[in-house]
Length: 253
Image (cartoon, rainbow, N blue to C red; front, side):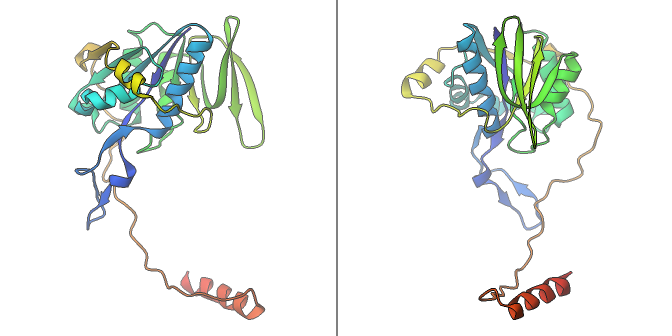
């Protein structure tokens, strides 16, 4: 079975700074693989091993995708090959634009299953996997806790609030994994060294049909304004303290 895992490069959350105007500053941030995408990569690698198949990676983004360290970080986690669409126009692409480019790239790849994370670690819209499936006209399942091959079909466990659905779908298909579906491996030195020798295919936007116009306009992205805390501490769960707490909450509305 040929499996494609999609991933995104994101700024490390601990390096993001907030300016005086609330705007996010990324100029000092290190860029890393999205934590939810690590789950997708691991799930793809495990399924490929279980079916004696192949696991390849796919990403679309700006020039940071060319970073050798990030390429090795991705390919050291069990995948055999990397495909990427690189263009500055993709640095601020929204979910629809990203999904459109990924879907176009997937039409150039032979696959049975596409595995996505539950959302990107920066915007976390949880839309890309669903949009990729819709654009390709394929069965798509989100909230996937596990997926395994059963003959010519795929058995997918979908984790809901009060139950777990077991679905049988025919490949090719698209799934989005929950954040706790599998535990991503920690690459060893030999894995990182081997990653540098694995094939990487780079496409331009023109080679995948360009990028569509976004159906929405992002006006701004800002951190929420900080709220000064009153710092009132009520000791003990007495009737008097509880009454004071309730009164304080009502007064602050």
